[in-house]
Image (cartoon, rainbow, N blue to C red; front, top):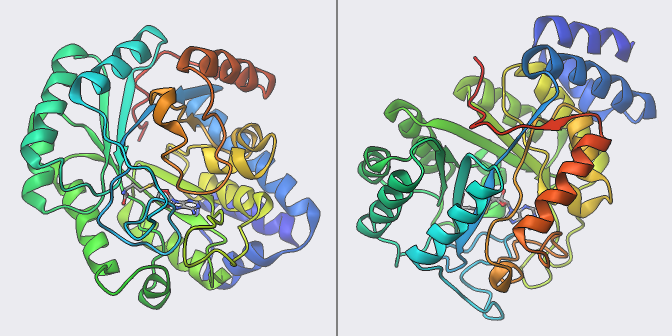
Length: 346
Ligand code: SAH
C-alpha cells in the first residue's frame, strides 16, 4: 500500500493531501527505508554522488527577535553575546577557501549593529577576495531595498526558513511582533530580486501536526525554492519551550526523503541539528536524499556561544579538523565531497 504511494510520489513528484498525510503519519518501520531508497535514486539521477559543502560563518549572536524556540533570542540573558569583525569574517573565508569551500554562508541573529552599510561593505570585501565563490546570507527579515542592496554588493543566495506555513501555528512559535505574512513577503522579494532562495522548517516543533507539515510542503510548492533546509526542533533550556520535547530523527528523515521526491532538483542540506539528535544523523540524512552539508567555519572561540539549541555538535574543533572528519563520514556513507559552488540544477 505505502509502497504504491512511494512509487507514485517518485514518478509524479506530488500526491494529493490524503496520500501525503498517509505517508507523514505512517508508523510502519519499512516506510522510511523505502522512502530513503527512492529518494537516493532520485538524488543520484540529478546530482550523482556529489555532496556540496557550505562554510557557515556565524558572525553575530545578537538578535532583536524573541522566537520562542531559539536559544539566542533577545530575552535569553544567559547568552554571552559576540560579533565578528569584518577582518575576522574575511579570515574565516580565507581559511575556508584553502579547505576547498566555494560557498560562504553569513548567518546571524537580527542584529541592528549590522546596518545595510556595514553588511554591504562586508559583502563587497568577500566578493573582491573570492570572485569565484557564492555568498549566501541568512540574516532574517529585511526591507526589500536592503535585500536589493546586498544583492548589488555581490550576495547570490539567501536562506530564510518560513518556519511553519500556517498563521495559527506561526503565532504559537513567535511573539505577536512577528508575522508569517512578512516572512513570506521576504521570500518572494528575494526570489524576484534574483537570489537563489532557501526556505524550510523545523520538524517536531511544539504543536506541529502532520497537517502543518502538509501545509509547509504546499507552501514550498508555491515558492519553488532552490534549497530547502529542515532539521529537528531541539529543545533549548533557556527558552519558553524548555519543557517541550524535541523532534525525532525518524520523522525528519522521512520528511527529507519526501522533499527529495517532491523537489527532485532541490539542494537539501543534511543539517547539523539532524547530526545533533542522532549520532550518524548527517550520514543518514545524505542517504535519505540530502546533498548538502554546512560545516562550521566560525572561529572556535565563538562557536559555543551560537547555541540555537542544546548540545550542538562540532563546536570544539578547528575548521580543518572538521572538514577531514566530515569528508571521511561522507565517503563512508557512499558519497563524495566536491570542490564546487554547488548551484542548483534546475
Ligand atoms: N536569524 C536568521 C537565522 C536563524 S538561525 C533567520 O531568522 O533566518 C537558523 C535556523 O535555525 C532558524 O531558521 C530555525 O529554523 C533554526 N532553529 C532555531 N532554533 C532552533 C531549535 N531550538 N531547534 C532546531 N532548530 C532551530
